[in-house]
Image 1: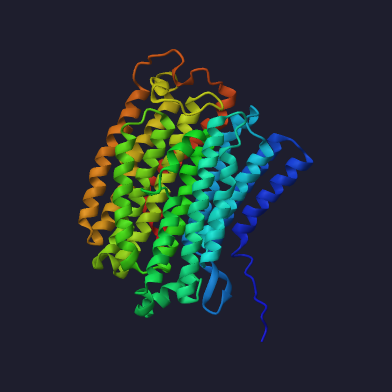
Image 2 (image 1 turned 135 degrees about the vertical axis):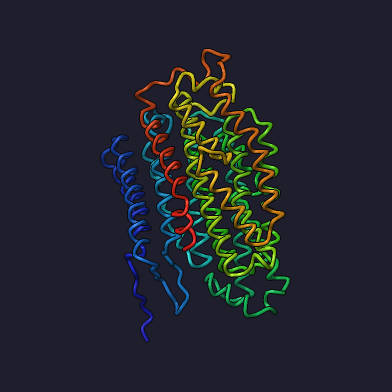
Length: 494
C-alpha cells in the first residue's frame, strides 16, 4: 500500500501565490534595492493572489492533504471569499503605506515582506481543515504584525504597542494550543469535521470535564484574536500606537482572520450546545462595552478601535443564536454562519475606508490625532471628508451607507430566525448607542474649524495621491457591496 499522497496544486494555488509574493519581495529588495519596485511587486502579488483565489473558488470545492475522508486543506467558496478579501485588504493597506514608505518612515523591503507573509497566513486560514493548520495559519497571519506595529523608527508609542500586542498574543496562542491539545487527548483527532462527528456521536465524550475545559480554552484563545470583551484590552493601545496603515490592517485583516478561525471550530468541530451560550454572552459584552467606551474617546484611532471592538460583538451575535434549540436547526445554523461572515466582509470594507479617510486627512506618517484635528476637515478637503463620512455612516448602519445597513439587517434576521429575539433587541439597542459617536465624528468633519492646522491641512497632494486612490476604491467597493448584499451572503453561505 502506497503512503504517497497526490497533492492538488490547483487547490493550493492561492497559497502558492501569497507565499511566492513574500519570497519575490525579499529577492527584489535584495537584488535591486529600489523601494518603488519592491512596493509594485508586493502590490501585483497581492492582486494576483486575490484573482487566483477567486478563480480557484469559482471552479468548486477542492480538497487535498487527505487521510481518508478527512482533509487538511478544503478550498471552497468561503475560503475563496476570505482569501480574495485578505489579499485585496493587503493591497489597500500597502497603498495607504506608500506615502510613509516614500518618506522613509519604515524600511520598505521588510515592511512589504512582512505584509506578504501575513497575507499568506490569512489565505491559508480560510482553507484550514484541521486544528494544526488552523493555528499555524493564524500565527502566520499574526506574527509579522508584532514587528509591523513597532517598525516605525523613533516612536516610543509604537514600541510599547508592539510589546503589548506580543505579550497578549503569546498568551492567547498558548491558551489556544492547550485547548487543542486537550481536545486531541479526548478524541484522538485533529481534523475539524472528524472532531465534530465524534463529539456528536459520543455524548460520553462531550460530557467529560476535560472536553469542557478544551472547548473553553479554544474559545478564550480565539476570542483574544477578535478582541472580544473581556479579552479586548490590548486592542485600543495597540491600534493607537501602531502606524495608521498597520492599525487599519489590524482592524480588518487580523480581525477577519480571528473570526474565520473561531467560525471554523464552532461550525465544524465544537458542540453547539456548549459554544452557543458562551458566544451569546461574549457578543452582548463585546458590543455593549465597545460602544459605551467609544462614547468617551477623543483620540481618533482609539475611537475606531473601540468601535471595532463593538463591531466584533455584532459579528459574534449570530453565533449566539446557537444557545437556543431553535438556533441549532440546520437552516438556522447555516443562516447564522453566513450572517457572521457577511457582516465581517461588510465591516472590513467600511473600516478600511474609514482608516483610509483618516490617513488621507492627516500629514504623512502622523498618528491619528484627536477628533478636534478632524474638525472642519470636509470643508478643506470635500471629497476625502465625504468618503470618511460615508464610511462612518455605514459603520453606524445608516443610509446611504447601505453595506452597514444590510449587515445589521442580516444579523438581526439571522437572530430572529434562530429564535434569539432578545439578542436581536440587544443588537438594535447597541446600534442606537453607536449612532451617537459615529454621527458626532461625521458632524465634526463639516463643523467650523477651531484651528488653522486642523485636519493636517498641509498634506501634500503628490504624497496623498495613492492614499486617495485607496480611499476611492474602498468607498466604491463598499457602495457596490451595499447594492448587491445577496452576492456576499451567497458566497458566505457556501
